[in-house]
Length: 420
Image (cartoon, rainbow, N blue to C red; front, side, top):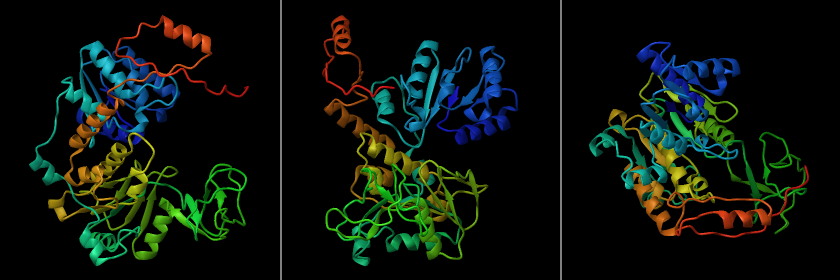
């Protein structure tokens, strides 16, 4: 049973198994197959007619008979987590099934989560990693913004695309396509006052103003209302500037800078599966990066706006940033194959950036796990939240036989939901 994060990855594994084993030996369980076809395949699995299953998150529950191996690719991808209650994660489901069926479990990916590091640290799982010599041979060279770049280009640290990034793109376009990863989709998803840099918000709600592009007026990202005239509540200024630039605006800027080079975009509304192996600029959001068709990979890659990933108010901000960067960098040609370079525009001293430079996701995950152990954060601790009427929650706590190591937080009053 192999579980992949999305339909594109599952389709690639499906094609590879067809080429390796021939048709009829496995089934593909994804939402794109349609209800009738998916049920027919589920029955084939349930009856034991096929012994191999490839699919997305829901396939973790496929009734495969006599399980021998369960595999999960990129367990840090948020697509593996069900947002609806009881919010199961595909990794946890496969862990339970592996123990119940006495089967093997394989967690694979370019990065490593703190949960996977905990399995290794506890002795439940072992490492399958390549020697450092092989990693240096197969990985592209990664470059960050350093002091010598500041000396040569004083505006490099504040510029969105410093001079060495332009030079990398210009040189790599002679050898093939260049990947540009932009963390945010849209044109200008965040606007601010041009004078005091105060975030621009809607006059009708607290939603952020964003530019849809062209000559259209800014509109609210929440309620969708347009704002013809805007004045800053802090300084009274009436002009707006971009505080966050999206993928479409980035593609427009690169198109003007390289007028003779085609620019292609890949994002939520239109995801490209592959691009031809010829000079082009490919602007993509994380997770939507296309592969190079019948080629060794991208000639170079730019990882823009690293601050947007590292600055997210999330426990997994550093882990998620490294995962997205490694997935994009893995599509670039190995450094010995053509001197390919990955340029990451983020603070060079940040731990995820240094892990990317060294191509050391295991070391980053170990340090992340150690810090969480000191603070008592997941996955070292498990958290269960119970919501209900006060008397019911109190009765449950009294009836529960919790271990001595358990810590009860609360109870805390919550606002009742609105009627209906």
